Length: 422
Image (tube, rainbow, N blue to C red):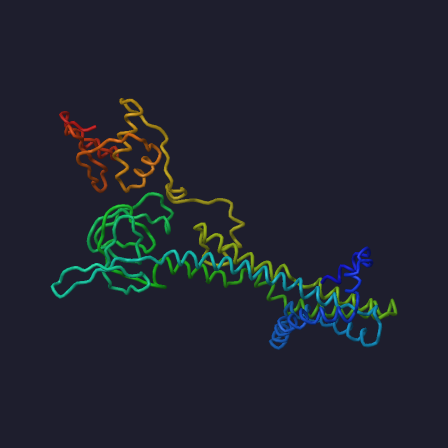
């Protein structure tokens, strides 16, 4: 489209490069590649839509670009340079191709985000098998190779490789990937574990109940992909009116052509105004922007943990005035901070004690405390252990016990007035 600049910017007429672009034969050579590629794409789509009785916007593009190109060929053959409009044909196709490319890029970026989310769920699992002496053998295997009924060993800090049911063990599972809950939930024997969740503490032996596309997370991702393929009400409306819209535009273009030819007594301006009607009437906003906006909106929502069951829900979302949540603890980042504390001990000593205990815990609250109160001179414990659901208990060299846990836990441990727990 460089030669188009020579037409719209007269100062370029004196530039040797742009003066060369004014050569009609060079313009034809430059226009042929985009024209034939564009007509192969838009023309084929236009033909199929006409054959099906539902003309689409590619009919308008094909007729507009084709008319400008054909008339320019006639002008070139007859030596009428004023009737050459190769730049018009090339510009129409290039701009619409650009819109198609932007739409494709938007959709592909969304698909890449969803694929990355799926790929992030591919982890190694500890599979349990038995030898001839019925002794357990644990070996690593990728979760994509798991089958329903396989036995797994899942340790604290590991991601649950697939949907499964606990056969043995008590754990604290972080299911924020699905529920948004910032705190882990307790899971015990016969309780389900969701693939993709993370064990904050505890160890479990579990049996796989679903793999591949049957897992909870895979079904959710599939739902998002299906929603991207659905047409929202606006797009459905555009499809319904397209059968009437395109013929009406063609009639208006013919009227514009005939009226200008009769009034101006000149063919060239009449044809160009008819082409202008065809091009301007292309519903690019509905044909290009709407599908891209829907796909990107659904993908962006999925990346941020907001899932839409269908495209209609996304379009209706703009009308929501109030949102009611059924419980607290859902709308959080999962990153805890210490709001305040009280202690009879000096602040530095108290922080050092708490940090020395909590640094050994896998509980999310303990991790937040130890990260915020990290100090250099920590205590050296003679013994230290973590009790599930209660907290940390340690003993120093003098036999004094220290406990860090919930209020209920500490209250129970200190009922006896002779205790030596701090």
